[in-house]
Length: 238
View 1: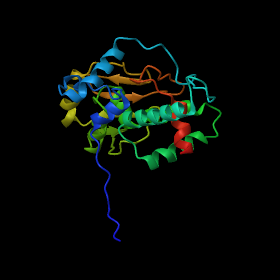
View 2: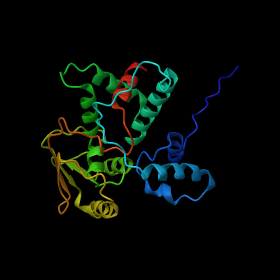
View 3: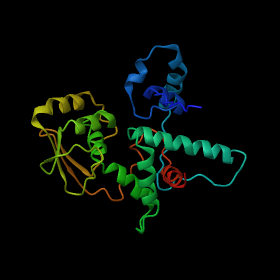
View 4: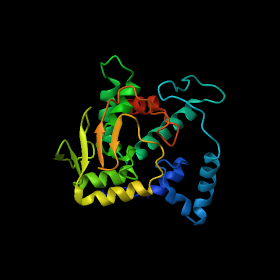
């Protein structure tokens, strides 16, 4: 019997939003969709936007590991899968193999600091994340494209790796031939959330200096409630 090579069917980005019931990447394009299949999802998203979220911290948020009427193992397993999917989709679709390898390294870190802080700081020091947080790019996917095309220099050297890890004091600049593209992105940006304070940004010259990220609180920098403890532990275990 011949074993057929069945390729995994591609799932459009917006259908992933429907499954997660969350506008994970803050795409305003969603609200222009008119087809019937989007009505229930848009109604749900608009309803959530009317209510302000209660303040919380990634580093204190936890879910009980004991079963109860409102917190069964089945519900916790589902919530863990949703948290992993939201995190992966927000950062532009990371490879599962590489993600598990990095999460294992973070979880087994011998540093005295909380592994949840180490994990968030790792993903936020990536070059693509910094371009997105500074509003030089309107999404992490757009940031990856800008980097891959060679528009970005770090300390005077062209970088084409979106996962390039920045260090304190690194100087980021744009190729002068493509400044008009970055200015257009900034012009169309809503500037929310505001750029984090560890980024020293000059919007006149389009340059960034990467500052001290240690112990920065990212609680208001995600469009969904992120359980970073669940994300790291479940990638490590599974």
